[in-house]
Image 1 (cartoon, rainbow, N blue to C red):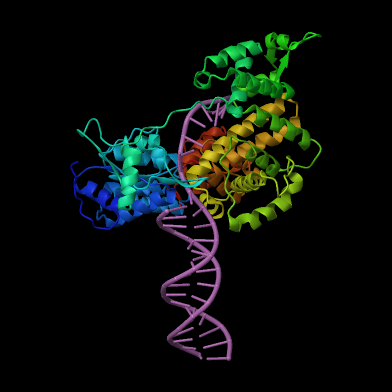
Image 2 (cartoon, rainbow, N blue to C red):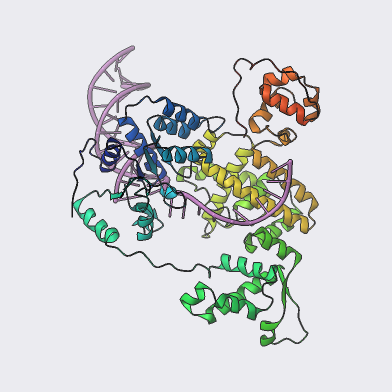
Length: 516
DNA sequence: GGACGGTGAAACTTCAGGTTGCCTC
DNA sequence: GAAGTTTCACCGTCC
């Protein structure tokens, strides 16, 4: 096998390879196994680069300004980008990710150090992929990643339009390691693919959907349908499948999402052929595409809520109990106390039964409390840096959670509407809006205006402009001092006070704000 | 003698990601 | 399993 020597400048293989790639005028992706490690490698490479490119400096600044107040992560990214290096993982905000991807394609950014985010989905080929570490932490300790994933990452090497070939390089720590990795990955065979259809949350979701759209209307139909799937082809155990389907139908029936059209005397054979239909609620649950278990859990929570005191934490914890919002924030050893304390304060407001400390689900429960706490801080207008420090959640992960939380709250709104919980519905609508904007209740009237998010709304509020009426009574000059000229004009226009007056320049010290 | 700061070894902690789903302005 | 972080014992310095 032909070999190639690369000069060792740093004593770290991944670093040396990355620097060499830049020297030969090419680009590389470095895959690391943790976010922290991806950031560290990027930073280490950036330290070795000497450049003062104006374009890169601008890019670095836009990476920094992706949020209204930059976090330490933004600052770190910005410093790297100024050297033509970037890190890329789920903790980044969409804007930053796009910036990095686009500028890698344009050739401005030479090296991206990434977690496996980049391996799937995104079309970002490079001359070289450098695989820093193929071990990853799992519930069973450290383990080598699947061959399929290795192929996914190494397959990013070689740009069809620019290079005749690409290089995928694994950095091995020792001779032994080298041998093992060679056997596992270079000579290895990719794993088989297994159907995940028979997992209960998936199965109950699809059975309900099939019934709701009238695609099937008897158990026999359902069995026929699943008999033609990859799952059945792979396992060929229709008896087991029939049992699981029975169980799912029983659950859906018990939860009142489906109903049988029964005769008075019905034997087992007849159940198989009797008509099954979704209820009104069941149909909506299927449309919303949430796990029926989640939907049922919401209905149970609403029943509880009607005879007890609730506040925003009640509903935040409710959505944090669901499978959809996972993974939950993990509660570290040192945070246990803080979370327990919070739990003690709010436990009377919870809508689910608190598991005992000795039950296995207690850990999830504590994590759901921590996640709900984080969301609560968000709607109390804490910024991203605070949430990063207090909850170890990065801006991108926060956005992702907020997105799911929004969807779940919408679902719960819909369910409360169908079940005629008018009062709860009003609360849920309010909470959803607060979560969307990350604001206290008092800012709700202001964020209805386009261009006004949490930051500007708070500015207005502290200037005693608390609602639309106050906005109307504020003259354009004052308003543009608070919001800047352009936004002020747009606000006035939206509340029906179009004005041609052009406010004089920006106030001293005026921050340029992005729409939230 | 005691407060304080610096140092380094040992103990402890943490660790990827994402698709779809809904509505609305 | 490895890297980063915290804890803690130990030592020297200064008042």
